[in-house]
Picture 1 (tube, helix red, strand yellow):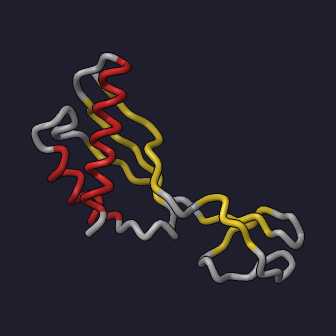
Picture 2 (picture 1 turned 30 degrees about the horizontal axis):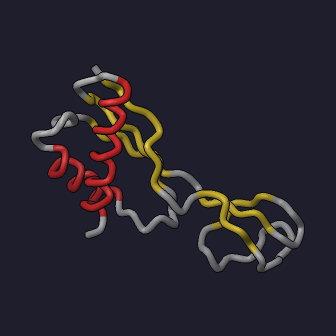
Length: 113
């Protein structure tokens, strides 16, 4: 379950921002997860609660937004939405696609005290 290590990394980011921004408590963390990120939202919620226990984010709400995957087609130079890494370009049928989004996890917003 790699979601726990993702949450551990998230906690390190929160600590670094707390030090830099001088806040002592995180009330809410909003993240965006791409469909091709291999991150399971429910496993991330579980890992978040476990990892944040006793930290500046203990009891913080985790909001998860699931984004769409997009890629740049190197054939027609269109940015297109895709469902998997193996999909052809829906605009021209080309197969040379460069992922531009939807394959990661990103902290979008924090509510802090």
